[in-house]
Amino acid sequence: MTAFLIVRAEVDPAARDEFDAWYQDIHLQRIATAYGAAGAWRGWSAVNDNVHVACYEFADLAEVDRVTASDERSRMLGEFARRWQGQATWTREVVESIQAI
Image (cartoon, rainbow, N blue to C red; front, side, top):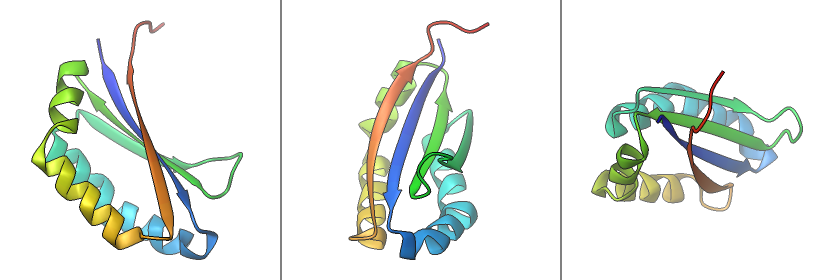
């Protein structure tokens, strides 16, 4: 079944515009390509203005496991931490689709 890597970031309001431009112009495409994602999307929460969510789609959990164990992921996390230190924190979820209608 399809699996998703979901990244939730809480962004300092003062950094929101810069974070949004960086994700739009650089990060979403870079991650999707580096990880070999089947698709990717992102957006801002309609409930909390400072929450950004990005979702990367993969064929199955094995693909997500491959990505999360990769050296590329470690490199990307380091880049994110250096770039947004003190301005954004993130968490991730891995979700396997078990039903669709």
